[in-house]
Image (tube, rainbow, N blue to C red; front, top):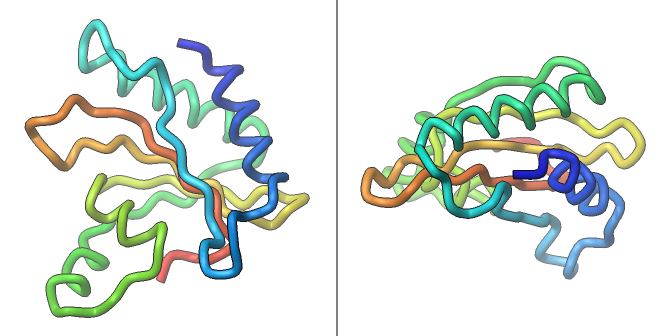
Length: 128
């Protein structure tokens, strides 16, 4: 579990060009991928949040319930926000000051059958 490595990845994705005109975001799974205990995943998320808060100030914290309701009504939610809604309920977002990109961290834990895993999205778009 290397917080410094994941923070460096976040820096890289904030600076890297996006893959294409219609794909204006980067996503990545964070952490080791296998947790000795589920609580270790949430502790890792806390450490990532602390590192990003030291760099960029307090995060905006929000939930995806409203986006989920909009999806259920048939509204198309742009990526990466649609995927984020499917993965997590609780989300934290910072704005990286140099690039202006949104850094969003969440633990993908909506699926009760899968092991929770921290997930990252870096994008130029605000949540819809």
